[in-house]
Image (tube, rainbow, N blue to C red; front, side, top):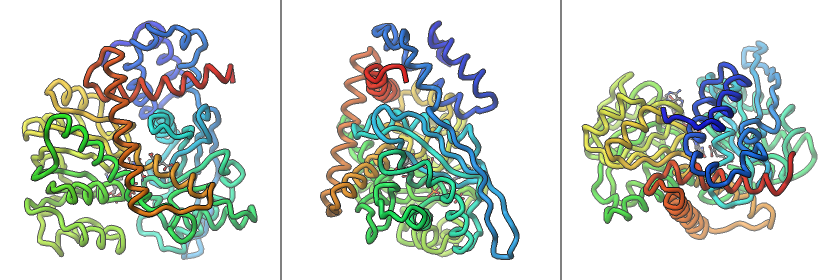
Length: 447
Ligand code: NDP
Ligand code: 2IT
């Protein structure tokens, strides 16, 4: 761990005390604080106005009961969350995650990350996150719908196009956003398109939002490689996960001439030196909602049950599944296999130890706040289209996404230079995101 100076150490101690047991939140806060030493040294007004302390305390935290009835007529019970973290730059904005592991500490880590990520996009959006410990696996469409309706029956009173705008995350995609939007519309009697993003294309959604996070991550890595006179052409790429982010990261890698040799889900990984057949993988995972072993059986790829996808040697690694999925040992394996870039498509997939191993071995590491910001940036483009009752073409929207990712890449490098950490995407992303939110908070007074 990098030591924290006195003022930042005090903030961290207070975060530990106020948020007991929320390990992922502690980890996310520490990671940002470790970058802020040069900032507080240069700009004491942030400490004087307790900006960092206030930034670590969500503006509002909602926890609610979500009862619903399953197909067998039994009453089921889940817990819902929405953490409205920071609205200095705009309405709270961030996804909803439905996964059995969800608890307050996960939602807060995600909301905290979202604040800085959203600032980095340059769009007028604050940060928030929500979700539930509901497990969608094995549930029928009707059960998913009843759950979403019950969840929205509480959430609707807290959200709005100028207040808080949720979207998808793990376990929440177009189907769930549809049921959530339908219930919001029914309860409020308003066709308020801008209240949710990730909507379907025929009812207010944006082109490219589905693809945006994965595509954006790969656009960012394209800039990283270009800065080193390289490209994706012929590169071996490993992508973890096989959900929304992973599938579209893989698709863009292939479009740029790279070979995606392995991907995974929570049951294991598939590896194929010829490259993954993405059309088949999409059919298995998105259309049929099957496990990745079914892809292996139908494609002839090798399936390694319960194995780590990071055992597969590659030039570029894109962790796109979940938090802390790539640890120090995995990082050492990647280094030995010749990996040159690791970019986080997921939120905080690399443990702090993994980041240390990668950086000390000279592997370029791009944190999620920068690498996966294309998803929420395109959500903000969806909000723009909704506000102006317009809809843009795929080409125009993808060009905007590419331009935004390019801008984030430049901003990270410029900021890292300015604060004496040349080449560090971690320092650049944390400091650029932080200073933008902190300056707005100073201007808005003690609120
Ligand atoms: P999906 O639900 O579409 O896919 C998640 C994938 O990750 C699945 O393959 C899933 O496997 C795997 N996974 C999830 N949890 C675990 C776990 N505990 N252990 C092992 N594998 C797991 O989610 P997304 O693709 O939307 O999200 C992936 C990551 O990207 C998350 O970290 C999310 O926060 C982040 N992200 C998402 C954005 C978006 O726009 N959707 C934007 C920015 C970041 P299985 O099916 O077996 O559970
Ligand atoms: O982590 C993320 O940035 C997301 N899940 C997307 C959030 C959004 O509002 O589009």
